[in-house]
Image (cartoon, rainbow, N blue to C red; front, side):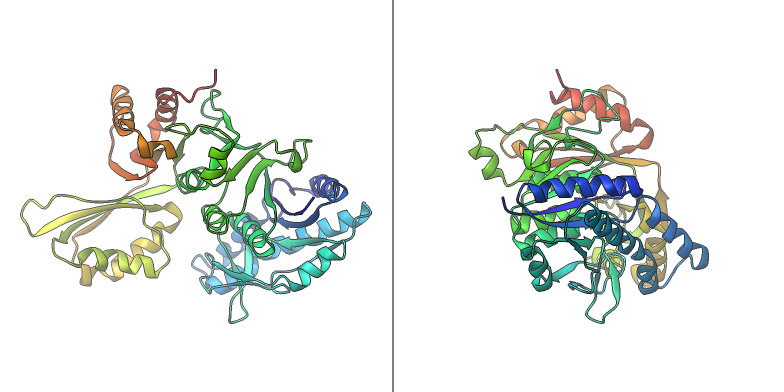
Length: 415
């Protein structure tokens, strides 16, 4: 028995019947003796609908007013879930983000959680009530509503678990755990019983849709034990049926040997940008990427081509497709300062990544990747590496072929 945070995503609370199903799961945890705080998303489709309303009025909206609109979906869900729990005889109370408050910075649409007030929430939990909290949102120092970006409810849940020093944070979703790759691409994908924070962070940032990247960062920084499991399974989270995300020491303590490669991730939501004719001189990279950073646009893979004449070069990089219009606009505004010739964009790309903490101590991982892709005639456009991952950019049409081939090449196929 202890204090646990449960998070339910949009598909889990997609309609009234599913909200009742969530309430039943929460009640079972309460009946097991746990203190329970619940974080919920908006009902599936609602946020998209709200975004559509905004886009129909203002294609490039004031980000502060955008947040006011799109944050309303979660307020509906917290009230409905609190009511559903009460109907089951469970004492429950909903809290809006400003009531706690969930304090964030003022980066509207991509806000980061600074702190969470827990006094009233703990009082409710200690009084035997379930606290129901909205994900995805907070309030800035100026008192304006903020949102955390898509998938932000995961971050809300982990941040709340850290603030409450919860024993565990269970993320309920429409999948029953973290797999070696997307099971929709290959039926040979295997569910992983445990993964490290570092591996999950790479998976999340490289295309896995199971958890939002910042939620994993928070979990790693605060030592929050996170479990991913399915809302639609009858097994309780306390029975540990999903995938646990923990530090490497806990996995080693259980006597589990880490694979060289734990999984294959892919992403089709990136765009490749090439800025041609950039002056080959010190400071040009800062001049190019500075405006993008100031606009809160995250750049990922970066390649600078060899300067043949010693005067100019090309810079190639990737960033989310959703940020493409703003990125091009920022680059155009800085054209005089940067002094480039042209901005070329390519949306027909996919990023394929192999991930595993075992890569730290094993050679030949990159060679296996390059040989496997070469045998299937797949050209590599950009390469990026870290201590526990290798990513390549390829043409989007080869995504599934590349994932299946690499999954087999690294011995990840289920028996």
